[in-house]
Length: 251
Image 1: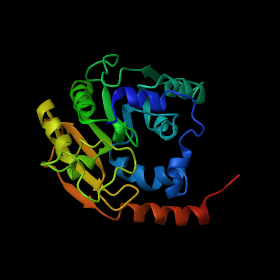
Image 2: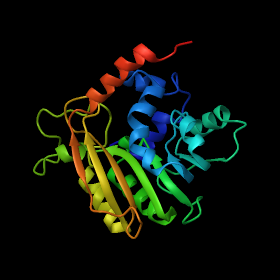
Image 3: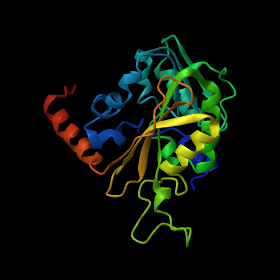
Image 4: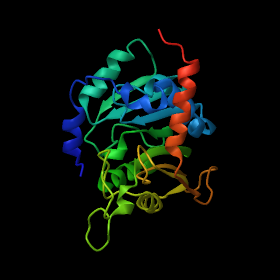
């Protein structure tokens, strides 16, 4: 869990909220982008062509479109793609695709400078993530890079029972068979290399999520993988929320 079909059913519908409420812990979408996402992504921006996988209703697309010449949006939920078409109507340089939840066949090989997915593939099981990583290996330029937010809940599954360890709950509908270790392994098998992994406690105490940074094996960005276990990630969110309440303009 969750399967591709379960994800499609969950997201391929009209949303009551375009996703902005999921940024409340940071004080809003802008606060989360500028305080949490952009500092991690900024070394690789601007980029010629960015692929955003799982854009939803465009929460991060709004910012990414200003950081590239061409932005490619791919989502398994057609409702999300149509919502992005409406939201960004009039903006040139954006391509929109609905896919099968695994394939990027519509994108030319060696055409993507930056792959980005945030708060989306956390719901994808290991087989889906592995399939996408194989696709990234073909689609990235030789000096391309990717930053993917995915589940690490699989690291809490007991080898003996195949179930989550006692006391560990799946509060945020994360994949229970995906982990930081598996992501690194899948990259290695595909001819990519993880160059950084930040394992975080999204919305709780356990390290249930991971931000994985990767690049082609012969890329100028290549370096040994560095893994950081950030148990204070939600403190960052709380600090940003506090600041946003003081300085953010509300209309």
